[in-house]
Image (cartoon, rainbow, N blue to C red; front, side):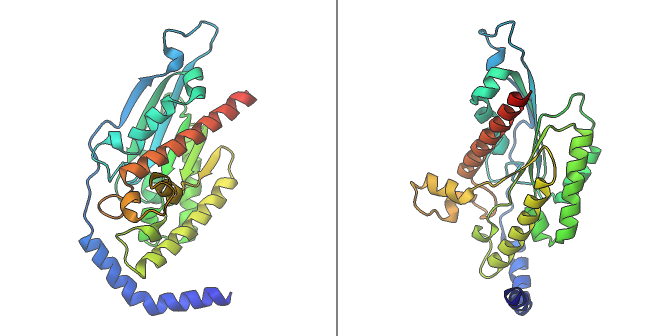
Length: 277
């Protein structure tokens, strides 16, 4: 309690600095474009190949990636190097997916700057799919953090996103990726980085709590720090490895590790479904 009061008092004292630094970051940060490339596609998987037997029941696996600029792959040169571009081939290598499904149908619905409210609105506007979506991956929260969305508003919009995803899209497994370590972003100076990082952590805690209260909804703690260490032979890695040239978005290396972690979780969830079916 005392620590909370002290933290609030500190933020009040530093508010002018936060405001100045925030405006400067907004003015000076390089605006990276969304990468060019396909935003939907279809790939043939192992169960659709020459070795497919008649007694093997195969079907399509549908994937939607929804969210903000990170979901859109900002920080990479093309969609091939972004999150979806790394995720699709990673899924193609998963044994459970190769053995059970004959095709992967994927789509990307993501836009730079989108908050949870923008994503909710987008899901409402998109047409209802002809078949249920098996997997929906969401990247959301960074823009809610920087726009200072309240925790109550954030929680309600997450609840609404889950409701429309399950009701309208028939999503079987909904995966929310954790917020990134914003305090590590090179674009954010001291002490603004600590303030923003604390806000992101607070929203991430709410996200975890919301996910635990819904069936079929999963929280994935994207371990960006360990990803960077792995790339750096186990040694602490600086922001140049984790983040793109703007010091704000994921680097191509981070997209690769993030996609692999998502791929492993998706395979695990699909294996659980097959075990209980």
